[in-house]
Structures are given as structure tokens and as C-alpha cells.
Image (tube, rainbow, N blue to C red; front, side, top):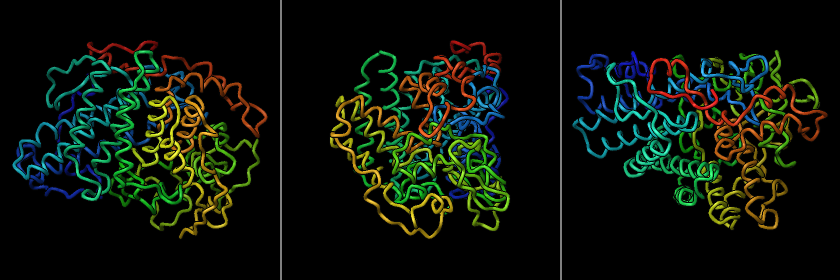
Length: 538
């Protein structure tokens, strides 16, 4: 396939330019040559760090994934990324569809290079196994994304370092899932514990959490497609997420915004993230520029390429102000560096995705294109939601453990900063002056959600309320079989406080179809690799 045509794995580049500075100890340039590669423990370490660098690419966790329109997030109407925002895209889309495919496979090839060669390096056996486990974790994560985006995909067992045998057919989804599971099980056996590792690297908790999501996804899709009840997978999802909870290595931040702000990186809620670093190292990111509080970049504003739907802001309970306003807000950074927060409900100003805001600018060396907030791939909040959803499926309704997990999220929202007003929240004052307000989001119980359907609906909304803006909603709607229905719903639904349905939504609602539950295989890959077949509908 074209992804691998013309690609030679030059891990020298990874040593000299790749990897996050937070945990990279560079190999001296005098040693960085292909003939010397994989000869020393330092080379093995550098090869795995180079594989981590793949996560920063735009098509992986850079910014391309953020454009996938759902019921809570949409592209700005002035830039739909070649139809991604209106579900009018084709296999020729080069803005999003092609980079996601190409850059995931580049990362897989780099992970495969470490998986293939690190075992041959003479070094401490335990450390060597840990490095291989990290590379296998990265490969599993990348393939988990690919199989959800595209369905059947070519599975590359080993690195490709020549132009031979590149016409690789797509493997069935079930085959790829089995490989993902095997890689993550190896990780659970050989990765470091959280306390033994450094931020940004995969741990046992990372592998358990990702594997729990893998099982939950596969179980959901099995049930969605009528191929079974998914119970075996739901049980594994519950077991693994339950272990992460009882292991006690992770906990929710006391204040919801503190899970995301740059001043609180590497907090105990983060199970696995993509690390970035500012300072002219070519390791910064654009996360808060694609999403964020729209306005002048130098003042902490964003471009506003990706915004909140109006509906998103209305799915929160009235007292859930902290999550609602931090995630989906009606504010703007003004030219003088102040924040305008008094827009009326029906004002034309778009609603923002505010989690990765850069406002207020506190660092005098701030450069908007070189920011170092990390991207959370797995948070402890996600694990609590996985656990609750899996148990609801297993028991055909909620039990005490489901309510325990969900009430942890509600309890956290009761912590408010300062005077607890939305203006104070958006100014994001430090240091925190937290007050616990027991009237915010009281605990839920069987008296509120007594059966499977009502709890499933709650969890679907709660995943949006808690995880919205973290690029999980499209995957969730697809695995539940809700993508088409939820997008069409917004065309005629008038949210509370509004006088009309979602602005400029009719085109999107009319275009979306069942075949959009998979992305197309990029036409460039189809042309380069005759062994590939296109997904239906494209």
C-alpha cells in the first residue's frame, strides 16, 4: 500500500528529531547511524521513544481526528474539511481521511521496528521486555483506532524496510481485535506500574484501561450488529476497569478543569496521554487552536475550526455548571485580552469547545503555535464510565457498583472555585479556592434510573458530558449504532432556550447515512494497492 511504499524505517531520524523531551535521553549523534542501530540498550530505548513520537502526528492525535462531526461537536461552517463536517466527504478526502490512515500506519511501522529488533539487543531482560511491551501497546492503540475508523485493515506483523510484498489485503476486524488483545495482554504482563514509570509512557494501568475499552467496543458492536449478546466482552471490560479502580493508582482531580490545564499536567487522573513540550523543540501542539475559546491567538484565543453544537450545551443538568461551561461555552477572547461572557442565548456567536483553552495567558514566553498541553487518551473518568456501562450491560440494568462509579463523577463536580460564578470559572483563577457544594448534582440511585434503558440513556449522555471534546463521541455513537439517528435528530430538534433547531444543520442531516459509520479507504491507497477493497457506500 502507498502508506508503506517509499517508507524506509530510518530510526536515526527518530533519535535526532523525534520523541517527547519529557522522557527522551538522546543518543549521541556519533552513534546514530543505521549500521550501529539496535546494538546498545540506548538504541533500544531511543527506538521506542521514536515510536511514541508517532502519536503527535496530525493524523493520529494531532488535530485531524477533532474534525469528525457528531451531535455535540461540529466543524465550523466556513471550513468543513472537504465535507467531513457535512458528511459529504469521499475517498478522495485529503484533509482528514487520508492523513488518519497514512500516519497511523507510519506509526505502526515504527512500533513494529522496535518490536522486531529490540528483542535482539543485549540488555537487562526485564527492561527489554518492558520496551517491547511499550511498542506493542502503541501498536495496539494505533490499530484500535484504525479498526474503528475503517473496519477491516491490513495487518502488518513486522516492520517494512523494503519495497517488497507491499500489496497487503485487509484483514477481518475480528482478526485485528485478537491481535490488539494479545498485544495489550503482553503489556499487562510486562509494562511498569505507574509509580515505576515516567509521565507519557504506557503502564500496566494504561494497558488494562485500553483493553477494557477494546472489550467494551467489541461487545457493543457485536450487540449492535445482532451477532451475539457481547456478554463475554462486557465481562472482560468490567473486570479490567474494575481492577484499575481497585488498584487505586488513579483518582479524579478535585476540580474538573484541573484535568486539562497546562499548569496541572501529568495529574493523577491521566492514565495515558500524548505528551507535548513548548520551547522551540518542534514538540508543541495546536490542540487549543483548532478547538478553544475563539479570538486572537496571542491573547489565548483559538481559530475556532471545531466548535460545540448548541445541543451539546443543553444536555447538562442545571447545577452541572462547571463541566458545562468549561466544555461547551458561549464566550470569546476579545482583542484587548479580556473575555466576553455575556452573550444572550440566541446570539450568533458560536458555542466553543473550551477544554483546551489557552486563556488566560500566564506564561510570558507563550507562543500560540508551540503549546505544551497534553492530549488525554485515557483518563480515570473514562474508566469509571467503562465500568458502569459494562455492568449495566451484564446485569441488564444498574446495580450499586454502577451508581458508585457514576456518583464519583457527580461528586467531583460539586467542587467549585472562588465565588462559583461562570465568570469566575472562565477567568480560571489560580491558586484554587475550592468549596464543596452538596446541592450540585446529588447522587443518583435506582429511584432515578431503575432499568437498563434509562441507565443506558444516562450513560450515553454522561459520556458526552464528561468526555465531550476528547474525540470519543464519534466512536461511541458508531459502536452504539446511534450516529445517523443522533445527527438527523438535530435537524428538527429545538434545544431548551433556543427558538430554532441547530443552525445550518439540514445539509449534514440529509447527507449522513449508515455507510458513514466507517471512513472510506483513501483512494490513493486503493490505487497503489490492488489488494485493497473499498468500504461500501464510497
